[in-house]
Length: 468
Ligand SMILES: Cc1cc2nc3c(=O)[nH]c(=O)nc-3n(C[C@H](O)[C@H](O)[C@H](O)COP(=O)(O)OP(=O)(O)OC[C@H]3O[C@@H](n4cnc5c(N)ncnc54)[C@H](O)[C@@H]3O)c2cc1C
Image: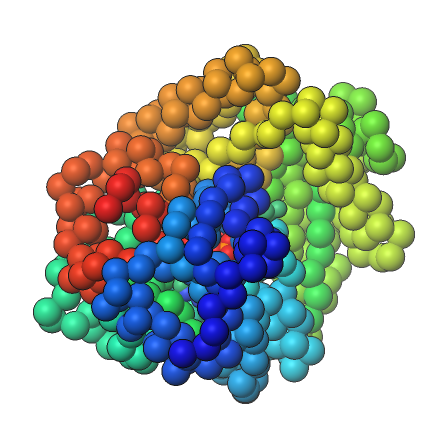
């Protein structure tokens, strides 16, 4: 077996993720091949050594943070094996954005687009069923994986292709998952590939995957549309969402619908030009232009649609040339820059929600977000009713208040038929919310599968489930 690294200075760089949860481990292993992964895993299973998979540690949930045992990093599993017309095959540690750039250079598209895609890995995007703005049109990573090579927690190497059933001897995890974008808990899978989408490093180590590719649009128009009041903004979301769902390649068929509240616009206004004084809400939209299609057809249809809903039509930014693209870029980037500045000034972490609800619960959920007593900004994937409320506490007392409010919001999302995590997963920080969402009986089914595959419960200890 490859030599475990035990130097504390090396280990230190692997013990924290983007949630700032800090753990500890006895050793780090950086295998370069599937056979090396399998040997390490088999050793840990027979010796009862807890093993945590770590990739790029951009998780916001503590899922790659170990509390004892060994750490297995996927960083040396970094080969792109093939990019063809219909599929691309790569190892788990390849950076997602870098792989996508190569695919797009070859004229094809692999759609999953977490904001962190240039910093996170393909294997973790699979393990977390990652998604982003474009999931409104394309769905999450789940729908784009054709095959996975997995090292099971016993060290057995298996390849599952789409269509392969879950092996009959594995306990089933059928459950009524919410009908919204979700990355909370094991998927109710009949297809074996799906079991590894969203399992957060608890059911196996993905070493290689085959991604399904689609047509790359010839161009993408970006639009920023401003609104004076929320009702008009939500009417626009309903209208444009309906058009996109009815005809995904129509003249008005956004692939992404993103929302920004008044606090976001204030941050943007302070740093960039172009935000009208009367604007309180904004939608950022992306419209694909297919090969051979006339972009002007989309622009004209969008202009009419924007006027028809009563948005601030004259202030709309449609990025068609370099100057307007740069203006949009500056406006959008002013928002995270402004938030980060606040976080540094406050000296306290921000707390961001990841809840999604059904269409008919969106307005009520927004009422709750807007009633947040602590300073906050609200933005995100409104096409999927998946907004991130970012609370910006300034004291320990406010941080505690923010955590309690997050839990109250999670309960409201569950009551509305939504999910406690639409894209970031559960990890070690939201286990209680998963329990509220699925209940003990479903959690027991998850655990039965986990125990069947991982008798010594070595993999991803503390993620999804308390204790064990
Ligand atoms: C600024 C920022 C923006 C983000 N935006 C988004 C977003 O838009 N959408 C979104 O979905 N997420 C987002 N995230 C969360 C995060 O980037 C994703 O969850 C991502 O998939 C994690 O990738 P990683 O390589 O950093 O994995 P890590 O954080 O290292 O690991 C994440 C989990 O995956 C497991 N894992 C990693 N590799 C494997 C493997 N090969 N086999 C089995 N298990 C594995 C780990 O054990 C852990 O449980 C964001 C995070 C940040 C910091």
